[in-house]
Image 1 (cartoon, rainbow, N blue to C red):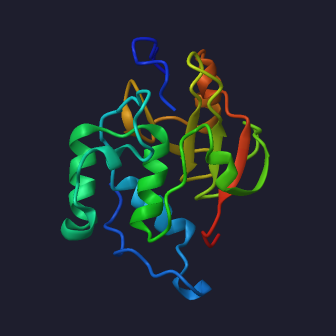
Image 2: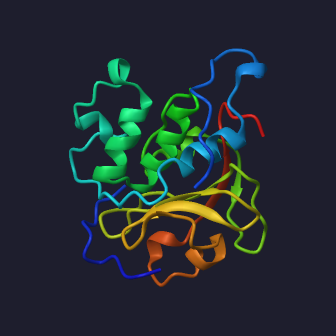
Image 3: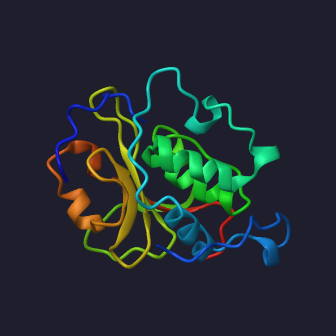
Length: 190
């Protein structure tokens, strides 16, 4: 991981995915694969730091008429303006027809079957590695598993990428990347 100390300290290609799935019974529930594919829709987007007062998801502050222009306009907008870590996951949830969650400070509240993060244990595709927001000098981070140790995340140096494993991210010198929680997204079929 490259040093991101110049970024504001309060920051809390895959094939096309199907249009958002309906909510309701398990047949229409989003799968872990849907979430992963949706996250890849933002691959290459620049990083966007969260600032005090910003909404989560941040695109709520951007005056995008989601209901009249559709999810592709949100995707195009985020590819231009950037994505913070939690918004990568929130976009994947929304794109898959699920409710968005929160930032790194509250995201653990939306996870199920959580446990302590272990960098030596392989993760399940679609699971989450999280370090919650600790304060202005340690704003936490979040990553989505796309393979046993491979994750997609948004970081200040590379934006949305899958360049690092969970262990490489965890071993970064920056404390914000030292994940503490491993868990699964509520409402997702694994």
